[in-house]
Length: 239
Image 1 (cartoon, rainbow, N blue to C red):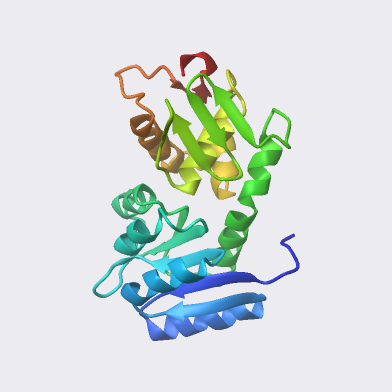
Image 2 (spheres, one colour):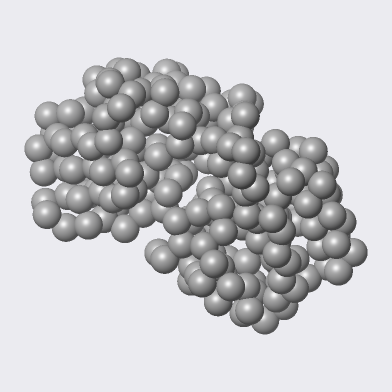
């Protein structure tokens, strides 16, 4: 269950009818809802108010959803769920690369959207519970790699590595289970709250991004290893 206090949700959608429908639905679900019809005004509002979650349409006039996400990500610590117009992998990959935590394809099913947002808001607790180390642990250190879960900060060789919350959460999940192969199914459940369907590339795309940011870009990665047919493994003594 979510906490008793209302969760704040910003909806950025230029379709007036859809925007109103979503606002009414989430208000009925006890969210504190604020709406925006364009990306430019949304950026200022999000950075100033820091809502718990942002529901962000990809296709917006002038400043599109990808640009909004790119502008807010380094200064906004909440969750971003992107609405995309199709099942096109390009849209999904682009959304994840600029820091979206999840995406839902149109047409919108409000109950599915509600479940996804609630899962995003629960995710931090789930990741901590999934750790094979002390669930109260807030920091992890391996050589020159330092992770602070409370602040969502990753440092490597004394320098902060910029990454989205979802990328950090994936790294934390892996680092919390060193030398243990974590399946795509487990990682997908942890990050997105849904079962792995054998096709979803979210985890794989984030692994590629993490490797680039953490200098693990050789032909055969040594820090986050792909175990063929099984999943991914964090190697603790390579940092």
